[in-house]
Length: 392
Image (tube, rainbow, N blue to C red; front, side):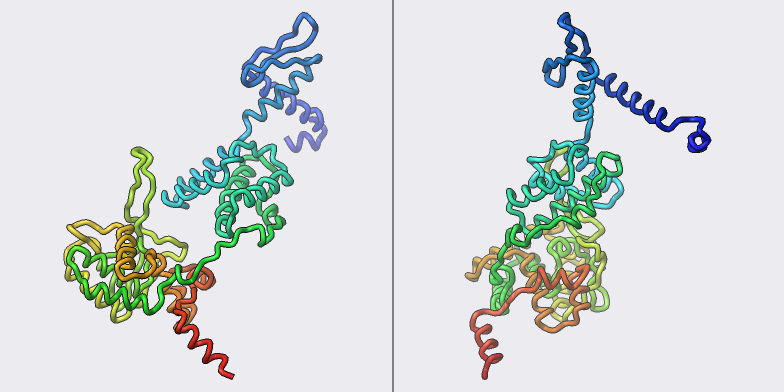
């Protein structure tokens, strides 16, 4: 074909005209209503919803029909979201839990724009869509990150399908989002981590009230305290993961919605939460003692933490920890706050940054420093430290 055009056998303009005529014919053939001429000389047809339209010239009416057919056949934001997401899931790039999280984010942030046809969205229009969403949903920095992941997926897939000329990478690189626009999620350090005094009180409570019905749960809480394990990782531990004073962490409990029953499914999968993948945690003497005690309680079980022959689900540790907090009179917090406390203590203890990153299972130390480092000092301790530091 290229050679024929180069040799002048085929005229490129004629060829282009023929391509356009074929496209027009295809669009008009897909129009399901008849086009007819009335006795008054006008041309008529129906559009979507049996809306009667007329034009003086047949060509003008056909142009209107073609525009409508194009609009009806174009991919919406929602169409492209699920095409992109289903491909990622099909290729094993995401697990079902992540799939469900993306769906929740899409429903949360794209409800008002999901039916927009991507083909007709210009860069100016897209900027308006994005900034309106940030304002209307009062997005935090994390919310904006989640929104961008989906936006990139939609428009990169649209580019592959030739539905848009927008380069979403360039668009986001040029987009100016003021920090003032994003809502600051101010967190109180006292609600994000446990103080050393609170940790002591939790440990004392567990040791003083060592009840059989909560013994394994309580030991699990103590093990998380000394290892910084995610609660899903804790729930999926096996005794075989422990060797030579280290704990290999390679699996975790995930939960997702079952497509058939619609119910929440919880199962163990052979991966951890982040791209950091399998990691080895160096154990303290206290952590080793807890693991050995758990093994003696359950020497033949598949998982390290089991009760009545069944693996203890992740949510039960948080329920138990909150109950302990209420019993000793401190602010109830989740198991994730225990993990943040562990990370904070490692950083405060001047542990090598690479070792902190490895122990936490983060892809970079910046993640630990930004999201897992808080002031864990009570007011009296903070006052002593500050007084000592500025003792002129």
